[in-house]
Length: 142
Image 1 (tube, rainbow, N blue to C red):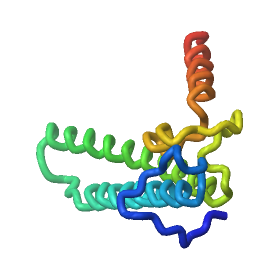
Image 2: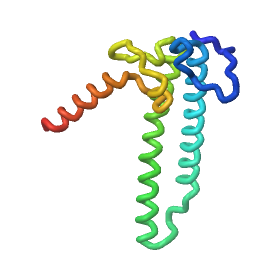
Image 3: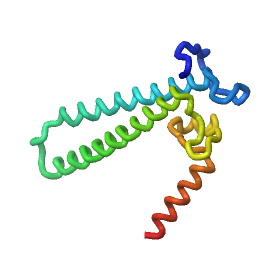
Image 4: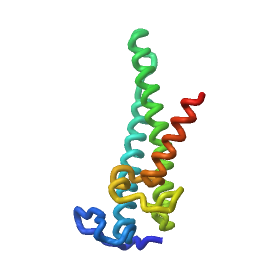
């Protein structure tokens, strides 16, 4: 369980000079994930409020069709956010149990740069490439 009282200096970024997934690294990524999670929840709430605030029976057919398209896009975005929130919650659980930053397939380090770019990553780059190749082969064989 990471130490919740880890203090990070302002502007702190994980460094390869530090031990991989030391308490500072874990705290940094925990905060990054929580901030991302909070942003998504806020944006989802705005989407819900926009959909609720619309008047459904105003305008001509073209305007209604345009509004339907916008609503459909907003709902798809909301569904993507919901799935992303699940992945963020799983990443936070890995931070808490100490497995964050390590490949689920190989146990190798995922790497600071990859986690910085994609904090919900669960696979190291090699394992991710193997997974993507397998997905492509499955699609191509259909």
